[in-house]
Image 1 (cartoon, rainbow, N blue to C red):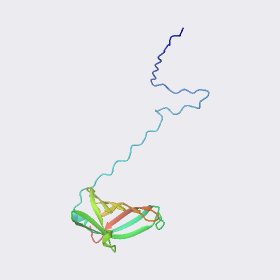
Image 2 (image 1 turned 135 degrees about the horizontal axis):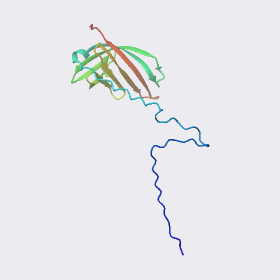
Image 3 (image 1 turned 90 degrees about the horizontal axis):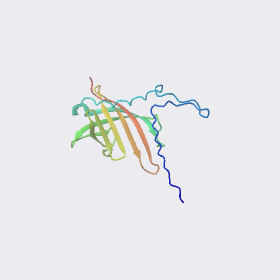
Image 4 (image 1 turned 60 degrees about the horizontal axis):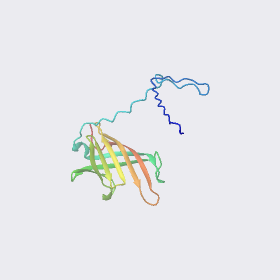
Length: 165
């Protein structure tokens, strides 16, 4: 004769139990009231006021400092000083480096009232924030293909050339 199967349902509800030290375990961790609060994430940068086309178009002196490089020809901390001329044609901002050729044109898209993302194909991206004090800050990312693919990330700061005020 077979024994009947007996089932026992065990339900345990734990409400606010404090951890207890046991002889085998180490001391209990800090109580939740003693733990440090997790800091809030930094606020998103506020968009500046919309800038007019006239405030953006013109010559800009830029200093680019490499803060990351996997390229053999560029080291972290290397600095490039260049001058860009920014114009507006065919419905977009266009930037060229002084002394560069026509193939070096960066086409810009407004991403916020005070920001423009310039691209040169798929290998270069430069996001610049145009400030009220006639200065710009941003970041340039360059991806180099070839035999040894590599990348460079620059911090960019600049001032308007030839304008005062």
